[in-house]
Amino acid sequence: MIDKFSTIFDGLRLAYGTFKIEDRNAKGKATGKAMIVREERTEETWQMHLDGTQSVGIIPINEDNSCRWGCIDIDTYPLDHKELITKIRKLDLPLVVCRSKSGGAHCFLFTTEWISAEQMQETLQHIAASLGYGGCEIFPKQVKLFLDRGDVGNFLNTGIITAQTELAEQRNDGDFLLIYDTSATSLKKILASNVAPTLTHVSRTATGDGSTAAFTVTNGTAVANVLVFLNGVVQRPTTDYSISGTSLTFGTAPAASDRIDIRELPR
Image (cartoon, rainbow, N blue to C red):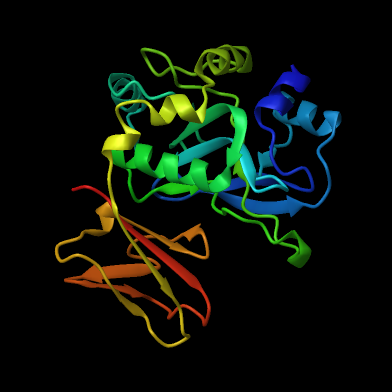
């Protein structure tokens, strides 16, 4: 069990994350203390996770900036898991749905080979948009790690409870592994599906100068139909930026040399 689970959720091996739930806010989202542990995961670490005594969060992007899995993190409360799974099945998407610790959903995409973090991120952005969650968080959050600077990226708690049944009921980790075996696919197969290729988008790239906060988008673009990245990290709509007319404005002007990527998704 440990060997298979650790293989499924392979990623950066220099560090992992853990999260201790302390409370829940008014919307039901779990709050608590998250921390990075800068050491390799051990068999004991995984066993504690599977026993439910200590959560393990994995950083999906590895030392070579590649991934074998990624995740769409849906933080909508309350979330109808059955409706979400029904939509995923209708679109024939190779996703595994797990309840997040907060009651939202983690939609995992597994591949049978290592692919670039950039490919994984972009593929999941397209899929998220097709599901109506274009503005949600995507893991990996980074497409490149600067390990020499101590950058280890962002981790995601790896769930062992799935909602991939007709009634969206909770199941055990053995069921999760069975679902994974039938869901892992290759990037080639995903891109050959009828979803990703048809989701065209307008891409805009800019470089920060430390003072400019507003950037141009197509008139009528809504925050729900745009993805914004700052140095490869997805930005939160209405929190990190806003849109009015043809202007997308950051709350704080991007620093000099910051890379800004704006992707306008189909409406």
